[in-house]
Length: 180
Length: 192
Image 1 (tube, chains in turn purple, blue):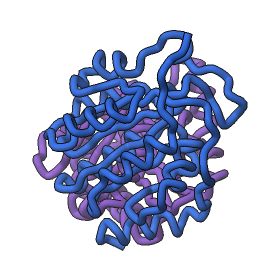
Image 2: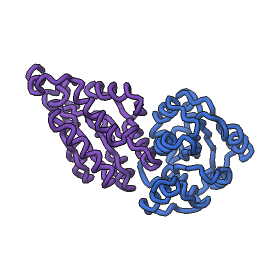
Image 3: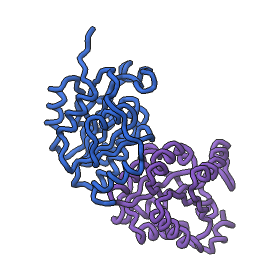
Image 4: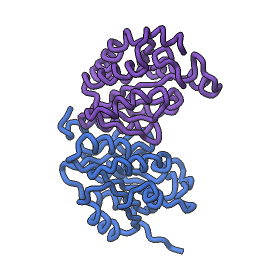
């Protein structure tokens, strides 16, 4: 953990979260639906502390996707936050709702199951994530350092809502210090 | 034993007649959707072609984005059983502009009428109540449906009506052009 923090050159654990929150705000992404995850906690806290956002948890990730799809059709941009294992529950919904109707869904996935995972179940689920994204023609950008974070997040949001093609921002343990 | 039930198409026609010009409907997949189409296509109806179980979440997204607009989620018993957690989310958010109507025939009619849990005693209204949705009714007659709609139509809280229906097949088939469906819907929401 100390090594990882040195890689980030003393940047505090919450700053990646603040950068992402600011990118959402700058691009008018107001609605945040999530199934929580320990890694996502600083991002969820940063968002919930800011009255600009409407943020709430759902019982399942499928619901979270359905809600942002409905909201986008009605004029509100949103983002879904989830863990790798939650993303693995989504292929049917992603293929038959956002892909089928060309509704843009911005996803933030906390990457669990790699770079020090202790749970074999999580490790195996993690291997499905990028193939699932690829099979649906969705971009998935791995976020590994705060240096490029604003650029990647800002550009991805603009591309998702500009092209109506959904995409995922994947929070690597390299960014989050890997506190599963 | 004879149990009184409604017909899905007839119930859908009654619901449609109640809708104002600005009211939006999210139609869950399958025969529920087919009868929603058969009851008369509307631009403010969003006809789902997959993502079974997501009528309530999609409707919730529309309702949150446009709080002045009435939004109705129309589902089947099989569909809602697949995504019961959304009733808890709905109760938590408690939008005052979202009503849910669930057509309950106790079976997955479109796949061969295999029974759902409601055929064995699962009570969807009771599930909704237990999730925190207190404004609810289970109806089996046109009079009861009208009375429930009268009761809930103007309240500023989410409501759920379970309609017990027969096993008659649907009266039509939804058009299956997703982009047309989505763009008509968004046009009607004054956004596309």
